[in-house]
Length: 281
Image 1 (tube, rainbow, N blue to C red):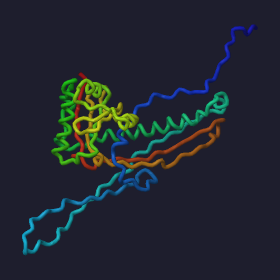
Image 2: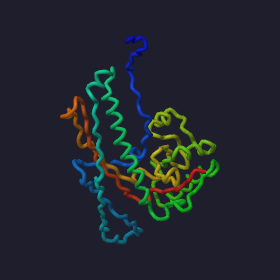
Image 3: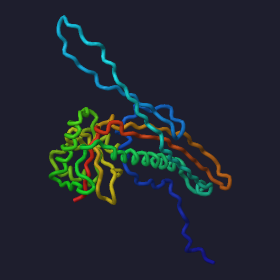
């Protein structure tokens, strides 16, 4: 049989990399309370003290007895455990010039980070009463004219809750960011420092909020988007890659890797976030 129609396969020295979402929420929360996490169910203890009373001093008059400060403790539970477990067959490895394991490892790292990012975003449900604009029954429908104004309203809610003005942020879905780009009041990224930060989803500043863009903004079937504004100390996050192992599966000629990611997050200050429920126009 003639082989004149045979077309040899050419293996490229490059591999296609997935189009991954930009991860944001895990980068804007605080990690102050990360401890030595070993297994799911571990806890991180967070201590806090009450307000200090300020008295009025009068010359030559004794001051009162020292105030006994009240303390409280909250627990950050490491209750999330995600894993990856993949293999690359020896035949595939031999046929391809590049080391696909490196790419697979990057993809697995992204996957576990994306799961944690989405988990953190879901903590909006603990927002303090009164710190919301719109709801699932009557979501706000922003326009190019009102999108910026709604961010001002979110920032005002944080002001009224005595939230520190530094390290404030808001995370927007791409369509909302598109509306802001049509408003001259929006300060877009333009400096070299801001452009460098674009890699982490930072796209500008508005109403005293650092503006981030993410496809992990919670929503219901592309509606009722939960746009969260807050301050870095509002949410605490702790994580650890507790185990990563390379091995040879018993019944396969392949290299395999499995890894376990343990993490937990807690909305420590419910009044330090504000949530806008919004629909596309």
